[in-house]
Image 1 (tube, rainbow, N blue to C red):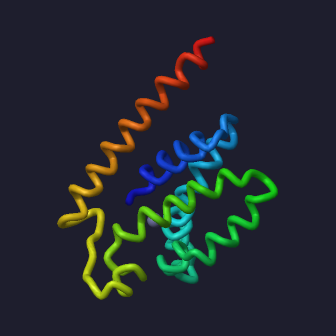
Image 2 (image 1 turned 180 degrees about the vertical axis):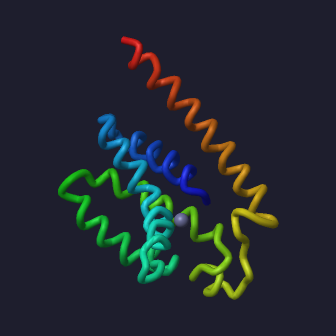
Length: 139
Ligand SMILES: [Zn+2]
């Protein structure tokens, strides 16, 4: 899925896990989008890009988990959600190789209606969450 989807969904998940501090929720947005951001930014580096597979690996995710546990363990779950969402929505993943099927990409073919449905669910969850947040902000 796209970077914005990962940032918003990860932040909602971290919030649902009980994190309410604004700075930590902003960190959750960045960490949730980290694999895509790292992969994208690496294209600007002269020595070449980080392979997509490495940026989205559970090994790198585990390293981030080790860094986050002493700071705020909840922040990791946005990153984990990113990997779990991307796994079935990119054609060339380990999942599809293991199943021996071609799979789908979220940005073309049958992946597009799946991505639209996921965005609709996310928008509904965000609307429900904002109904809870806004009265607290007004006080
Ligand atoms: Zn991704």
